[in-house]
Amino acid sequence: MNEKIEYQFVFSEWLYFEALCFRLHNPMRMKSNTVKQLTLCLILVVSSLFAKSQTVSCYFPSEYTADVGSILTVDVKMDSFTNVGGFQLSIMWDTDLLEYKEAILQVDHSELSGLNESKVDEGKVGVAWISPSGAVGVTLPDSTTLCSFRFEVVGDVTGTTPLEFIDEPLERGFFSPEGTDIASTYADGSVMLMGASNTSYNSAPDHIRLYPPTPNPFYENTYIKIDLRQAAQTNIKIVDQLGKVLHDEQQYLGAGLQTIPITKDIFTQSGTYYCLLYGSDFRVMQKIVFIDR
Image (cartoon, rainbow, N blue to C red; front, side, top):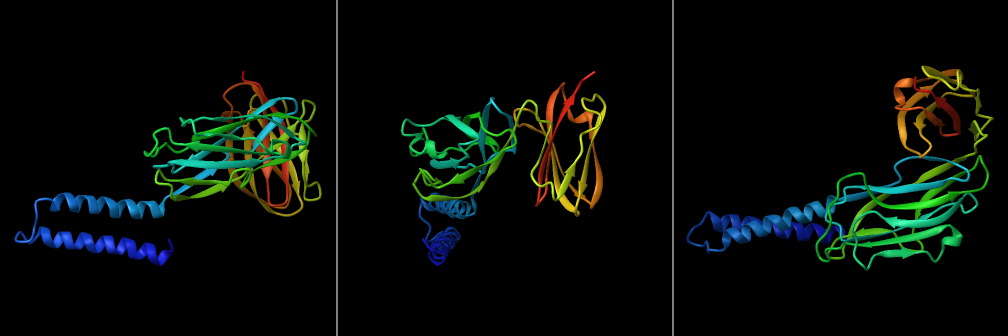
């Protein structure tokens, strides 16, 4: 249905609504079922306008960090999941760095739902979900996990693999219980691989120089030092070993030597964490160890 036809459809509904209002205010012409017709028409108009504005957002919640040899679980989450009858998703990863284990649907589903693992060897897998209620759509709160993918982390200790939404083996999309398409957006993610002996990673040494954090391990504060060739808008994240984001902020850093303080208030318990810095031309990581005294 193109935009002109959609507009005419909603406009015609609105004219019908106006006509019913006219009858409601003219008792000589009003029938006993006018109020029911008016209510139904109003519901149709509101439903049509809402359906046109709804956009489901599908995304990976964070930039994951994982140690080589570990088992990594990545989640696919969504927002604006309202009256959805089903969806299909496919993701892609680097098979040299991640070895696929399984995919798990995390929401109730019908027996028609399932996986397409025909292209796992190529680093691709598809997930199909159908509402367990049949003709009745499902509404879920924002940030609900739709499905999870488990991998064994293999390959180079300093590698990074994207997690991308693609259209094979299943074409991605969301649809209503009636089978009509629902608008949707997709935000890709990535996994940065680390090894037990690795303390840092720098994707662009020509753009940024990375110094060891001082002190490390630490129990009060530690400081990340970098030397930027040119000023850059930088995203700074602190994540744990499962990829959970503890701290996320944006900073504009000038050219030259910069010191970034990492305070103990970010951490809830002792452990190994990662400080990730992202710019348009670089991605760097520092492994830090916090001791809770």
